[in-house]
Length: 409
Ligand code: UD1
View 1 (cartoon, rainbow, N blue to C red):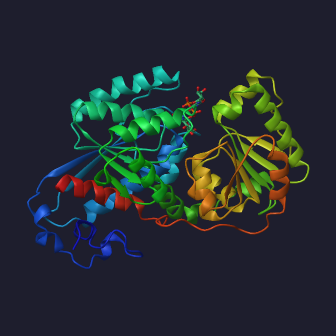
View 2 (view 1 turned 45 degrees about the vertical axis):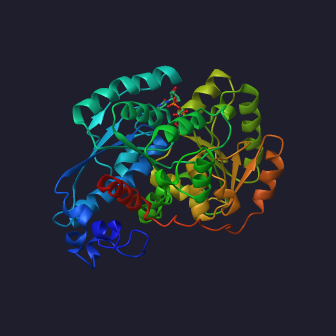
View 3 (view 1 turned 90 degrees about the horizontal axis):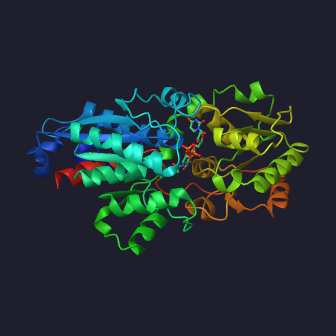
């Protein structure tokens, strides 16, 4: 029997069983590495920005399931959540906590927006105190935002083990701030939990020993699957007056697209043109809204080109599932559209998520090709692509199992 079976009462790689359906409730007594561990493993999870929240939710749920199904003799798990406050607007943060059922964070560092250096430094200064006070056994970080890298550096220097969820993704484009965050985080973290086998390959090529890498699947998809009932109840299509498969869903916020006046003008002109044929729904990230104003670009909404405030998680999933096509520069939407098999155009020269192209429904585009790619997308009437292996709703559980196994060894 593996440790995962002893912990959850089943193999973490199996399907269709919940932890309360354990077949071997006393198996842990027969596992020598766990039987001696009548102790508490302290896990400090970190979330900072919008795309982090749907990644921590499955781990928090797995921790809760573990504790309620835990056998006597297996280590107790104490899980705490730190919100760095990198994102703080209700529509960028609290709506996700509410919809994903994430408990109030135990600590909010309230760092807010700043330059990269100041934001990173502020997270580090405040997170160090949390680490020295709480003394966790593990710090769990997710994704690739500034908070991810900042907390990893602090924990590693405090001698605390770090698990990176969504490790190994590489765009090979160091002009992206997230790429720097990924490289630094993976170089320092102890346990690299990867969403797809390309990530394992990237890490091995960087000289990271195989023993630090675990292919666990995609935690984003855990959250998608857990929230499908609610997203399918969303009223957003009716509210916006658009019909299933008869609109484009757009999200753009990367500095390379929105911080450059000529690029942002060209994108908005192209979307305006598209809206003559297919209604466009564009929930706008605060960064993009700020840049539209700064560049005096027309950001007025119309019934066929609706520029709206950022939407919550369930509405966003509903839009991603029901759109004719998605245009984005978000990592998360590349994965969600792959899961829904909705045609997706990613307005970037590269992606750190190549499996969304090789298997999924995603294609890269650029400003020169955008017009023809959108025109082609108008003809996309059917779903396309396949769902990658281990994008099955059980990745959070596998992450936790990997941490518990490393703790026991
Ligand atoms: C950050 C992440 C990016 C992720 C994105 C998702 C980094 C380097 N970037 O980019 O990887 O894809 O989050 O949204 O960590 N703002 C608000 N309210 C908020 C948060 C931000 O108005 O709640 C505005 C501020 O003007 C801020 C700007 O948005 O200056 C950018 O926010 P910031 O967290 O610096 O980066 P993002 O562009 O959101």
